[in-house]
Length: 295
Image (cartoon, rainbow, N blue to C red; front, side, top):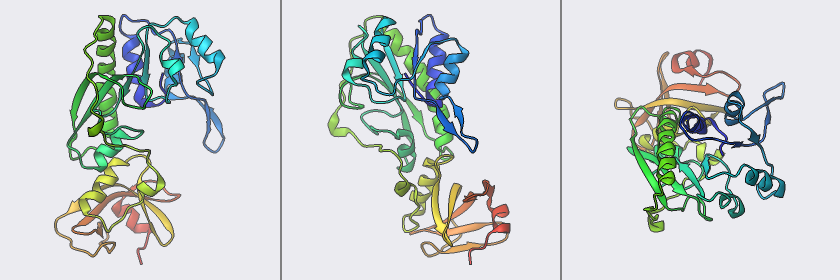
């Protein structure tokens, strides 16, 4: 059970193993773009290419959906980036259900663990597989794999590394369950930290913060959805930045040459390397400055 690109390597590694994937459950098809063309979820695309039956329930408690799931007589449900499952679904298989989560639980429980690890300037994160329980992201842990976060990592690069490490963790977990592994680790709820969904409010840059904090917000939301600010009532997204050690500006103050763009923060200035004006394409600072005035 999964929906986005993050889940594809996990399904792929299971298909290439000796285990049998009997069906895939994913999100609904969506109309996208100007032509409103119907597009499939990344998991559905991959499943159809590999001749797997695909279920796309609107409601997870729908009795027909539950009947379909039971008809496959599954031993185990594997969940990677899917919706919150009701108990009557995740308790169907005799071996239960497990989830792959993109953090070292109990840190960063919630919808956006990769983004928040970057926003908070973490130097390490990882993946966790855990047995599903009724409360979200609280189940007992099968295994964890740590991943170091490099200074140049952003959401895109860290996501791509984590989905590969995550797929390997999924396969290892299936083997553990197959061989009767029961020595699960209980999560300490007192050490839990939240990773809520990224909202427009969270993505808006406050240059009254430190340059480090603003830089980490940019990293955590690049390439999607993009950290942004407003200038002359126009939204500008920043995709790449670096902390300047030579420019000292007031918070929100802008300075630029023909090639370089700096914005002041609470302490240091931030050099803006790649950005996008609403309605335009992404571009480097030099190209951007040729067509935009900060007056």
